[in-house]
Length: 377
Image (cartoon, rainbow, N blue to C red; front, top):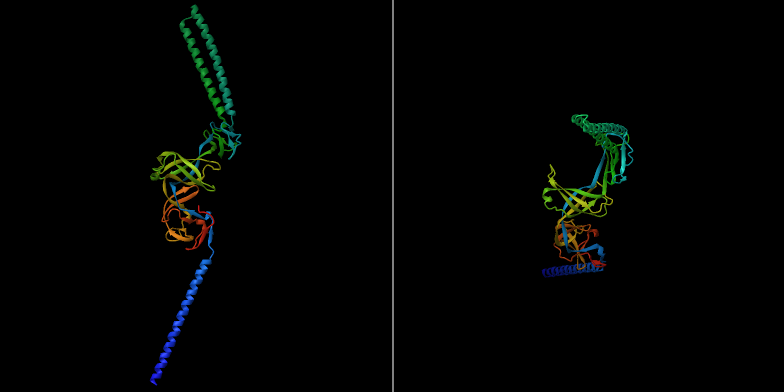
């Protein structure tokens, strides 16, 4: 009986072991089939096609080292039209935006009073001229009488003094008339420079005082940027250095060049004013705000557009194409510089010649297969 029980237990054990081994073999077979299916699906997956405009090649470039600057534009030539005589403003016809030429009449002030004063001065000069004529005839007569011995030389000297006094009075009257003529001429206001009216500071009918501002004229054909630079940064600035400026609404950067550096530091901030001549002032206006980069030197290094560097991981990286597949390669960023309208950055960690996806392509998973329709840039 005991022997039979042993055989039964042995049979059950053998059956259990056989069933376990069979299950293990079936599981391994299923896993192998799953892996083969995944590999086959990976082989059959369509590769992402990229155009040449979707990639850029790491290459050594001369990057301009720059100093950030900002400021407002100012016209090189600007002037205020001021009243030179006090009177009522008349005939002011120009307004903001109107073009004027140098010497053009832009307004007048009431000259009635100055016309009357000039006429009075001219009449006084005529009276003084008559006194000169009388004194001159008296002197000539006395000189003849002295020659004939009828009067003494003392009388002749008195006549000469009277003639000199009359001539001095006449010249003083003439000078007074010339001063009033100048005041009358000043009643006509002319544009000192050619340009556009930027401000109209008075209206017809107002009484303006001497040196009262009436108009401001600016010549926007020549503009410059007045930038404020820190004392430490000012040591790097030199006359002749170039810069790229960006204006709100401008499609592309505007070239500029340092033409002057103020020798004095600004009180309080201790900053230094730097003046940059703007190469093309078309469509620009006085008072516009601009930001830019002033080139202070160059450095040679492998570089990429800054937009191609991704920062959605703890360390910056680029999406590189290696053997037809996407790889995420970490990079170390260096000097930034401008090349055309692009901001470039020096990168370390990727060899020169590596093909990198630009920022506009968007994130792609590692090991994604890609194909280039044409050669990389």
